[in-house]
Length: 120
Image (cartoon, rainbow, N blue to C red; front, side, top):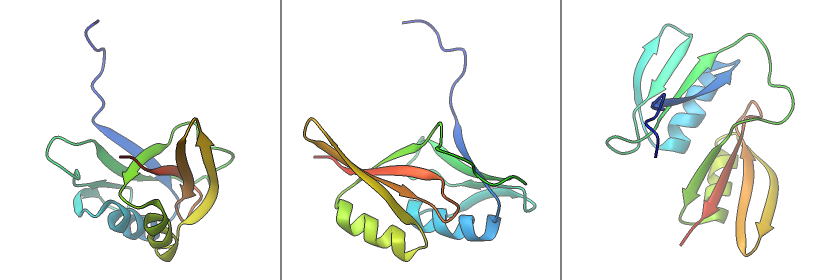
């Protein structure tokens, strides 16, 4: 296997309303804020030591079209996770089933898609 050119440290989500998105993602991820740079960047604590980082970046332009990159999330109970995400201001986009594997596409309050799936 070749040596990596880069090591991924953080996945960044572009947002227009930092306060709304910070509250939403903090609750969805169940973590606190690790670092902020003014109102422009927010980094969340990893969910577990050495885990992937998630951050928010304030941008002026609204999301347009389908995400080219999204988060895939594992949950214990997809229906309960969907309900909680919707309570927090997220929305249901669509459901999929492929070869017995099912997942749900959700969106944050600004329409950034992410998937949830109960695995196990």
